[in-house]
Structures are given as structure tokens and as C-alpha cells.
Length: 190
Image (cartoon, rainbow, N blue to C red; front, side):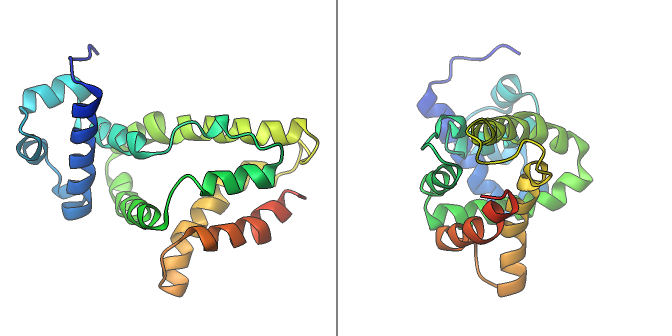
């Protein structure tokens, strides 16, 4: 799909508006009309640039993520995990967690959204995460046949879902640091 001449600043503004609308009205309530109105753009421009609402949402979420997980290389897996945690603050983490919990329901009812999120957000992020884990295996920190390697995304996502349900508290960096040290790293034999 041909990209129009949006500046990076304008593209960032559009993505922020999409995320704000998602937080305000949820995925089902978000419309291209609302995005166009909020961003003072035309629906035609939005469809030409992103093709569909699911693609726009997935790209907005991807844009909001810290870039370059694969670039983190502290020399140890523990150091890499803690460096990842340092890339966001508690306020942003709480907002992102609420957004993802809200989208979890919409994904089950919208296969196109599920496809877009997997293709544009989850798979690229998992590929970068796999690179961090591959380096840990290459350094000899983790056995290549450790079954927990394939379950790490499940463990980490589980922390984001479980803490608010069990403790009625948001996930924050302090919680995740303890979780990584007490659950994730021991499961990998680190």
C-alpha cells in the first residue's frame, strides 16, 4: 500500500489520537469518523494510509512501544530483562495494560483485528524478544531445550492480567522486577 506524505510528527499525532480514543471508548466505540474528527483529517486519508481500523489500531499500538528490544544487550539475561523494564514508567505501563486488557475482548470478536495485532505488533515484538533469548542461550545462561523459553511470553502476559485481578493493583516496574527475578529467571534456570 502506498504511503502518503505524512510527516513523522503528524503520524505520531494520529497514533496518539487513536490510543486516546481507544482508552475513552474502547475498540468497538472507535470509528474512523471519530479518528478523522479528532485529528482534523479525512476518512479517505485514513483509509489510504492504513487500509482499515484494525491496521490503524495495531500500528498505533506498535508506534507506542519502545523500539529495539533486540538492541538491549547488557551481557546477561537478568540485566537485559531489567533494562527492558527501565524503558517505560509506571504510569505508561498502567495505561498500556488497561488498553491491552480492553483489546483482549475485541480480539476474540474481530478476526481482522487479531490478524493485524499478530502481524504488526505481536510477531515483530516476539521476534525481538527471541533475539534476546537466543543471546542468553548462546552465552550458555539458558539451555536451548528449556521448555520455559517458549512459555516466557505467556508468563509475562499472565503477570499483566493476573495482578489487577488478584491484588486489584496495576502492574508496575517494581512488581515486574520481583516477578522476573522470582518466577521468570528461575524457570529458565538462571
